[in-house]
Length: 85
Image (cartoon, rainbow, N blue to C red; front, top):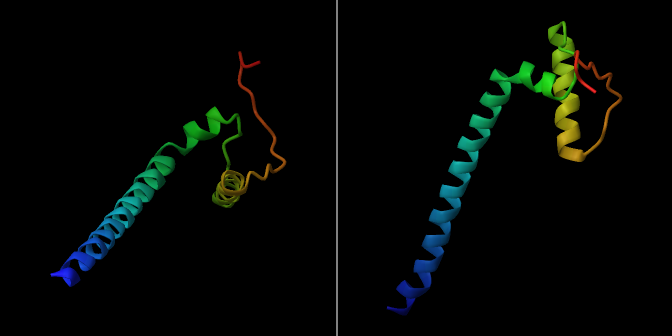
């Protein structure tokens, strides 16, 4: 009986951990999809010029990811539209 009482919290912890990892993976997939679908709106909101080639877009995506992860600010050229301050 005592062995069962000690194993119950362990089983609950394993189940909770697996559930959290599964939900985190789903959130990551949804976030990646949202960024992929709305990347041009993101560039516009950040006042960054839209990349003209695939290589330029991949480099900009790498720089954005680096900034968001490590708070390192690359040397960007901001493109403000009309009416922007």
